[in-house]
Image (cartoon, rainbow, N blue to C red; front, side, top):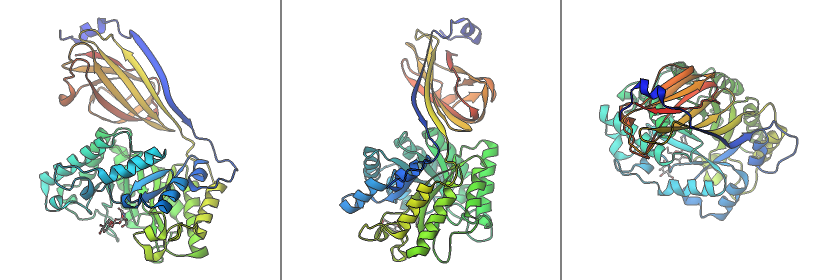
Length: 456
Ligand code: G2I
C-alpha cells in the first residue's frame, strides 16, 4: 500500500526509541607533562602530529620505527593521487594506498587522504580529456575513491593547488579549470556524498603569507563556499619553506583568519630547508603558530628523514638520514610540550539514535550518526525499509538549537525547527530490508534530532 501523507500521520509513530552514545572524546586543555614523542606532545592539546609516508619504505625498519613511535596521522605521499588510484579509466588500483592505510590503522593512527582532484599527477588518459567528459571523469574519480575509503579517512584534500601563483589572485589554468569555475565545489559535493564522515579540505602552497594575492584568493573562495553551504571543513596550508620562501611573519594571522571563517586549519606538508638552530627556530615558530590558533588541529611534516624528502638536498625534515633527531625535532617537541594557547577544545561525540514507526509492511526506520564539534556537526541519516520495499520516504527531524547549512541526497523543507527530508529520484526506491543514506551539515548543536521515518 502506498501511504498518503494523511495516513502516515495516523501511524503510531515512535514505537521504539533507542539512543546510544557510541563514542565520546573530550579533549582537555594542555597539561604540563613533558611528552617524549611528537604525537604524544601534540595530543596534550587535542592535536595530531603526522607525516607523509611512502609505501615503498614500509620495509625499512628505521623508517617504520620512527613512524610508529612519533606520528599519529599519516598521509600517503603519492599513493592516493589520481595517477596511482585510477591508472586506466574506471579501473581503480589501491594496492600501495592500502598498504599505507592498513599500516596506519593497525598502529592506531589516522589517515589524511591526499588528493582527490589535482591538475598534476593525473593519469595519462585524463590529461588529454576536456569539457563534460573530463568533468564527469573527475567526479567519478572523487566518488569512487572517497567511497572506497569511506569511514577510514580523517580529512581529504579534495582539491589540491587550484590557484595561480603570483599577483593575479585567480585560478590556475588547467584542464579541470577549463571545465568551468564550479569544478571545485562540484568535487567537494561529490566527496561529501561519498564519505560524509571525512573532513573536506582545500589544500595549497604559497598560501602562508596573509598579504599574498594567492592567500587572499583562497580565503575568498572559502568564504564564498561557507556562505553558500558548499561543504568545506578545512583548509590545508602545505607550508613548504626555504630561504626564497621563508616562514612569513604573519603566518599565525593567516591561520587565524582562515579559522575565523568557520573551518579547521591544518598544516599539511611542512618542511623547512636549512639546518641547526635557524631551522629549529623556524620549526618552533610554525608549531607555536598552530598551537595559538584553536582550530589549527594538527601538523603534518612531508616525510620522516631528510633523505626521504622530495627536497632531500635542503635537509628540511626533523630526522637526519640515519634517523637521528635533529635540533628541529627538539624545538618542535619543546614547543608542543609548552602548549601556547587553548587547543581545539572540541567535544566530538558520535551518537546513534534510532526512531522507528514499526518495521511492518510499509514501515521504515531512521537512524542518525552525528559528528558534533564545537560549533557544528555533520549528521548522516540511514533510512532502512521494513519488510516491504519503499517507493519513497520522508524523514522528520527536530533541529531545536541548530541550523542546516548544507545537505546531500535528500530534499528538505527548511533549515531549522521541524525539518522534513524526502527522497531524491535516485534513492526513492529502497528494497525490503535495504537502506539508503542522506546527510547534512549544520551550525549549532545537532543533538536531539530524533529522526522518524515514514513511507510515502
Ligand atoms: O611537490 C611537493 C608536494 C607539493 N604539494 C603536493 C604534494 O603531493 C607534493 O608531493 C610530491 C611528492 O613528495 C613527490 O614524491 O609530489 C611530487 C609529484 O608532484 C612527487 O614526486 C614524484 C616524482 O615526480 C615522480 O617522478 C615519482 O615517480 O614522486 C614519484 C614517486 O616517487
